[in-house]
Image (cartoon, rainbow, N blue to C red; front, side, top):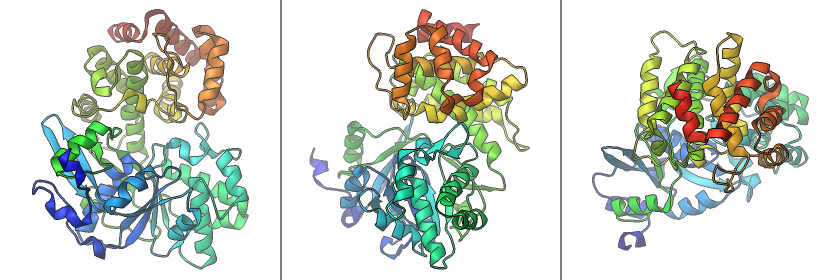
Length: 494
């Protein structure tokens, strides 16, 4: 393609078409104030866009240095283009393109752990934010505590200045700042963890205390860990996406990000060392984020997971494809309806409007969010997305049939074989354990359901609850007997 011979970069921003937004500030005057761990598509379509708006408003000391904890792919794609990239906002009516300049540099942690610790320990770094996914915290999702036996944690305890894990890097940098008499940075988690600020504080202080009781105490007393709720659908970027963006730009962008028009970021206003004017960039600053966090986890994320597992098993490649089936659209609505009664929201919150907006977003035909992508790492996601609402409903004596069907869909998925007998590429930290349990149990709901419910890292004590066991076993039996598509149709029509 002719347009792909030129690469997006600082030298040719002025060659972009007038309709394409570009950084409304002089990037040469921007200095870093944020280090972000987990330089993936979500961060670049969400927090980095907010910071780009803050920079345009004059907050030029809040540029971002990104860090990939393992893979060099993002760095290798963005460094040759001066860390500029395109965000393509897709709606049914069309796509808007914008060049983002908030990312100033990137570090691959596995290659240069000392460089990342040094950057985080620098006094100009006032916020360390994270999108490392649930599994990146090296914790036990059911309890929210640090997993002291996690291989990365074991490594980091013996290699304090050359860590591998997100908790290891945070503690190493904070320890250096404490030793140098510097104030700590704010730790800003942007992942889908229940009470994410409190959870990350617990994980980090537990890790620090294993190194030094005094260090753990100092972190607990001086470091702010505000909780947040983040919301934007960001599918995986494909080669077709790259070609489509290149044709609009007239030049090549090695790693653009695709997203939807909707975006939301709710943040508790507790910062150790200052922050940019996030509210002016559309962030909701609140005293307590928990109600908003639970709303998102139990309405959006739970229904997304239900659609992902059961949609994948039914042969649907994307969420939008799945939502074209009216039975699955009704399934998503029923997951939200079951969960809504477990929420206590601030006055003025319109859950019905939020519910309706989610169904519209899921059905966006311009957004190609793969069911397989959403199905990843289910062992880390189920406690926050589905199990908490199930526990609350059981505590009130309410049925859990729709959530049980979603959990059964996960069980059928992690067994590793689809309805046509083909292997499923299960991506999960516990995939090997699940596969072994599935082989031993066979495709028999009465054996497989109890076996998987007995995995304490996922279900904890809830896995032994008789009402939950019965509901999940019945639902899994229907999936084996009827197949996912028919089981969903029967359930929502009952």
